[in-house]
Structures are given as structure tokens and as C-alpha cells.
Image 1: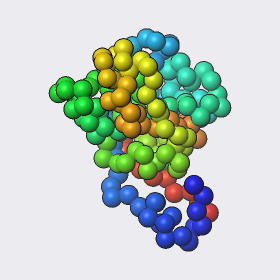
Image 2 (image 1 turned 45 degrees about the vertical axis):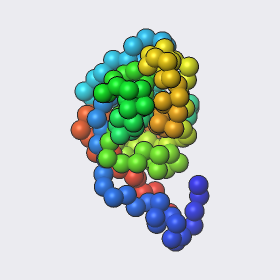
Image 3 (image 1 turned 30 degrees about the horizontal axis):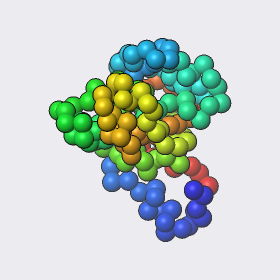
Length: 168
């Protein structure tokens, strides 16, 4: 959403209570294979994460998928489990401590790499396969966001996640 730079609503939308944290990184080497958890990864501008099959499609708005750690707890609760392995959600990055949905239409920074939220990451039918009966509905509203990579670099678990102000 484009708002006037002096708009009070814009000021509210650009104010976050704290910086988030990157908690988990997963790569999908190919379609329909298990995700591989890694501690750090190279991120290529306009491509995605090196080693992830989606990085082969430049220009896509779904270069990286993100989910909020706090939502994993909600999904686990809805499924009657103690926890949900982030790899089962098929998302690349798990972040905590920041409202991921508020980053959906903005630029944000993870460890010096700039991303641009491009939309919601809705659950797919695979959630029934990997999470069991009801997995699809448990993920609805908790699927996270998709993003494009604006500037590349290397990200690591523990990196800060923050809104990135765009100069007017």
C-alpha cells in the first residue's frame, strides 16, 4: 500500500516494537523432497536462496517463503501436538519476535539482505500429507508470506529481522 510519506497511518505502519530474529533456514533442493535445515545460506538478488529449487526462477515474486515461529506454536496447538517441525511447513525461513504479516507489502532486512514482501503464503494440499488430517486448515491464516530478494548476501540463524525504511 502506497501512503503519503507524512501520513500518520504510514508512521504507524513503519513502527515496530522490536527487531525480530531469524530462527531457522530450510532449503528445498527439488520439488516434493524434504527440506534441509542449514545454519546459513547465500541469498541471490532476484533469485532466492542458493541450493533452493526456486532460486532457478529469476523474477518470481515467490523467491523465498517465510513463516513466523509464533504461528508454528499455534499450528501445533490446533493439531494437538507439542510442536511442529518447521521443515514440514515447506517454508524457507522461520522468524520470531516481529509481526511477519506487517512486512507483507514492505521491504525488510535480514542480516543485511533486503527482501520485499510480495504476498501471503497460503497453505497447499501438501499440508494434509505432512501434518496429517486437518493440516491444511491448521495452516490457514498461519502460512506466512512470500518475498522477493532485492539485495543479496549471506544470512545466518540468529540474524536480526527488521523493517527497512525506503528513502522518499
